[in-house]
Length: 404
Image (cartoon, rainbow, N blue to C red; front, side, top):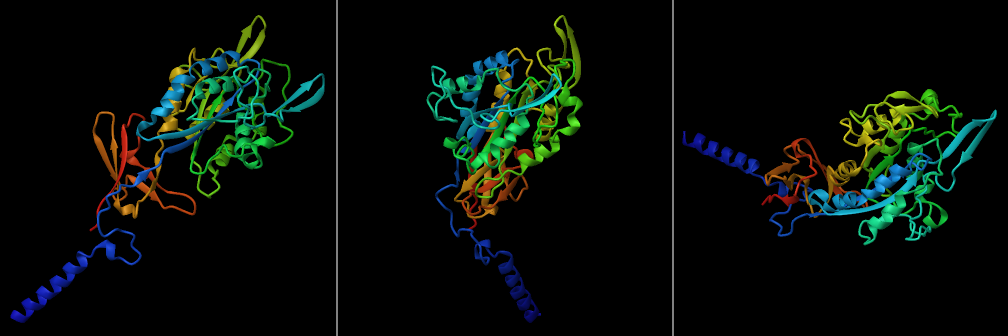
C-alpha cells in the first residue's frame, strides 16, 4: 500500500511537471521569460487617398461642392479614431478615351495627359506645378486640395473611372517616375489605398483598345448601359483591385467610395428618361441632376461594402456628411502594424469605446488574427467579430501578457 501510494505521488508529480511546462521552454519559442517594460508599438496608419474626378461638361457645380466641404473632410481624417494618421492625397480624372460615331465616321480620342496620371497641383494663380500629390502634413493641404479637385469640364463625356484607377495603380504608370508622367512614389509600402469616385454618369470602362462602346448624339439613350456587355465586367475590375500588392509582396488593402448617380432616397440605380424642352435626357431614378444611371457605379461600391456605407448620391445639395462618412472609412482600418510583439499568443488589444468602456481582444479568443512579418514588412493584427474597430473609438492599445 505504501509502495502504491509512493508510485502514485511520483506519477502525479511527473504529470504536474508536464502540465505546468512553460511555453517559454518550447523549442523555437520567442516568448520572453520575464515581463518587458516596453509595450509593442502601434505605427501610424498609412492611407494613400486617390480622388477620381469626373471632368466632363456637366460637373462644374459638383466639383465646386466637393471643394467647399474639404476642410471638414481633412479635419475628420486627422482625428483618426484613436490612431495617428499618415495620409496623402492625389487626383486623377475619369477621362481615358472617347469613341463617338459622328457624321457616319467612327472617331476615337485618347486623353494621354490624363488616363490614370496624377494631375498636377495648381499654385494659387492656377498654374500647374511639379507637385503631383499632397502630404497630410502639408500646412497648405486644404488650399491645394481644393484647387486640385476642380479639374474643369473639358474632359471626356465617356466617363471611365474604373479604368482610370486601373491604369493609375498598375504597370507601367505605378512605377514610372513622376518626372516622366508616371505615378511612382504615390503608393507606399504598407499603406492602404482609398479610392473616391465623384461622377454624375455611368461608368464606361474597358481594358480593351479601342474602347468597345460607341457613343452617338442621341441623349435619350445611355450607350454604356445598352452596350454594357462589351465592357470589362465589374467583377473583373474588383478582382484587379483586390490583387494589388506593394513592393514587399504584401497585399494592399483597398477601400472604395463613390459619390455617383444613384437615388437620393435609397441609393438604388435605375434608368429614367427626362423629357424637357431641350430634348430627352437619361438620368438615374430619384437623381435629377445626374446624366446617366449608376448600375456599374453602385455594383462596384457594393462589392467593397455590402451595406453601401461607401456610396452616396451626386444629386445631394451638399456633400459635407458624405465626405465625413468617407473620412470614417479612411480612418477606421480593421488591421494595424505592430512591432516588438514576440509572439501572437501574448497579444492583448484594448479598444476604448466612445462611452469609455474597454473591449479586450486576443488571438486566443478569436477576435484578433495575426499575420507575421515578412521581409521588409511589419507584422499585422486584424480585428474581427465584436472587436471590429469603430470610427468613434478613442484609444487602441496593444499589450503583452507575461508568460513567466
